[in-house]
Length: 182
Ligand SMILES: CC(C)(COP(=O)(O)OP(=O)(O)OC[C@H]1O[C@@H](n2cnc3c(N)ncnc32)[C@H](O)[C@@H]1OP(=O)(O)O)[C@@H](O)C(=O)NCCC(=O)NCCS
Image 1 (cartoon, helix red, strand yellow):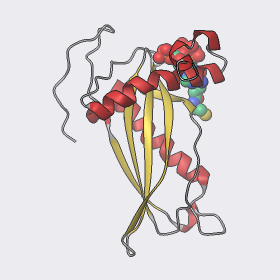
Image 2 (tube, rainbow, N blue to C red):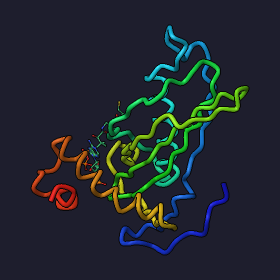
Image 3 (spheres, rainbow, N blue to C red):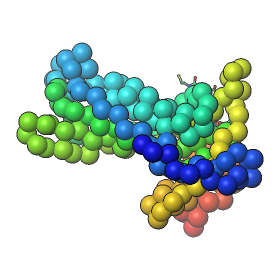
Image 4 (cartoon, protein in one colour):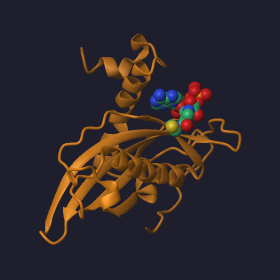
């Protein structure tokens, strides 16, 4: 993927980056070792691939080592069969101070049957860390179109919800989240 031009520096002092510059597409073929006794892809294996794909994206955005801070709820809507091709696409939706939200989308394809279907999606949060494992500031994300702007705007509510659930934010402080209920 060709990187777009660097953006002007944001308030962090780091140059802002475009979402497209860190988009990651990963392909995996479902082999016998990846399946359960029903010949379906195991959920844990899919989560592993999702974590890797999303982490690569966060690393590309931050140019740092990243750790997974949280994974929002994941539901498996349809089984993925032995022999299917699994395509995972990850993009950063918003960068905060040291953390980044990454949206993951998973598609499966039965190539001989020419059948392709969307399996699931999830939001991951990664934190950029320095050599000692301490959180470190990341560049801003600058949305470039309407759908990127929508993901960016809504990311604040998702962040507040996960921080409230993790006991890291008081519900009374989650102002944007509250607008969903009142
Ligand atoms: C994630 C981690 C670096 C946060 O460290 P910390 O000392 O709590 O740091 P802070 O309180 O300064 O938080 C740093 C950032 O993490 C975010 N964060 C922390 N816990 C979070 C959670 N459960 N969900 C979402 N974001 C979280 C904070 O909101 C903050 O983001 P911001 O800087 O953009 O505002 C630390 O908890 C860690 O190393 N966890 C283990 C990571 C790991 O091993 N992952 C693999 C799982 S097996």
